[in-house]
Image (cartoon, rainbow, N blue to C red; front, side):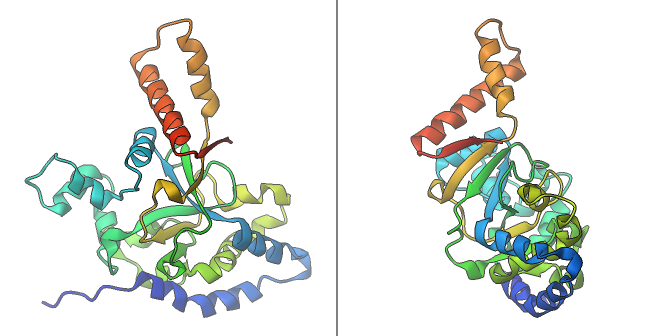
Length: 272
């Protein structure tokens, strides 16, 4: 049996540009009152890629200086050294390994793919956790090696099978990320003031996913946002008067570690 040819994800995204242009033109009407073009321009001019981390994973990224995806993390760990790479992924992602491997194995250099979200402000895709690392607009350096998906790409995976037909219509290259986001959210724009549009683009459970090869480093970071930073600050006050329980103490220690690492790298910490 022949091995299926792997697909160029970024070429697939670029190929969808004509379809996106046609769909975008359909959005213009007197009712939109220019909101379609304003939102598209806002996305193109102000959006960044962001990645939401658990505190431990964020601290590891800041300490090592380089982002590791799941494929790199399992190989770096000394645990389960006797297992195959696929078995290690199943150990690390017991609830989603089949989908992750199914998606990544379908594309060229799939094990290099990293995932983030388009972000114009706010705490990012909080579904994944509360620490949002916002990358500079210059990232990635090669804009031909980034694709955007109108929702989480896992939505196009059934067990290990990727719905390539559906996915191919949901992708955009860098040049068309604004049109992709506008097509997704056009019905919401007139219902919300422009200052809330960043929350429409990226919220807890709704976001435009970014897929890219380049590994972010600490030099790639524009800022870090912690959605519940007040909770950590309350722990600081509490620790001055009473003994914290084990979980609180661990959370506070991790917060202090992140703050120190951000200061070391001269990275801004923003409240959201």
